[in-house]
Length: 168
Image (cartoon, rainbow, N blue to C red; front, side, top):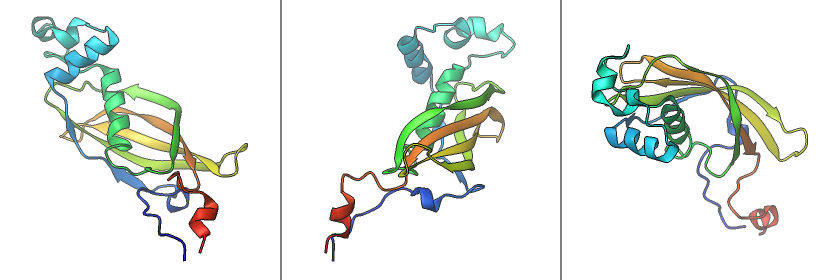
């Protein structure tokens, strides 16, 4: 019998439309916001100045919208390892909306479900999966929502060839 390959994450065949998940949480800190400002060059005062933000419609500092989107991606895939060994590429986002601010000190979670699945037209061992996504805070308030589209391998990407997998 061939060597047993440990599998982590779900395969395409394990997914179905409607299957849903919830990520672990991530608390947004001052260091996150200042670090993101430094990486992107976006030092907008609503993110970086307590005095300015208090006078804004939000009443206090908020995280960058793109920081929330970036953390949502990390919470969905690397943190959960849901698609470890099958994810190939993030193909895009559809209809992404920034619904409510994410405040410093909020803990965000990602609720997501399989919205659509289809075989790749050009590569028979790949598929495209669309997820409905909501970024929510600790109170369940939706902060961001939209769809994320991922390219998946239908076979594990574990560095083992099909012939090695079936060798006996």
